[in-house]
Image (cartoon, rainbow, N blue to C red; front, side, top):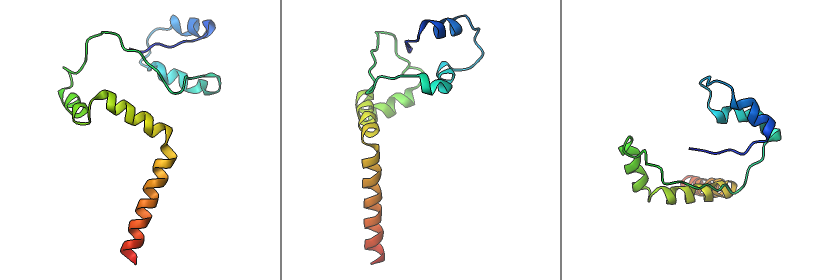
Length: 102
């Protein structure tokens, strides 16, 4: 479940539209120039039931990777340092290529 904060006119414009099979996030895509987001993102989970019972393979994979919290922390680190990580990988690959070709 997600929550969004929207100004009153926009909220009223979408509140009474019948479901058309379009995910709400897709409706926000063209609003990029008028959309603001908190960065880094924060979220609060309530005590709702889990969906892990429906997807046992996904639950096993999450646990294998150290749990959802660790995956989220790793993703946040990657998003904050994306270019440095990409450059480091390119440097490592170039170093290996130079060693192989030398």
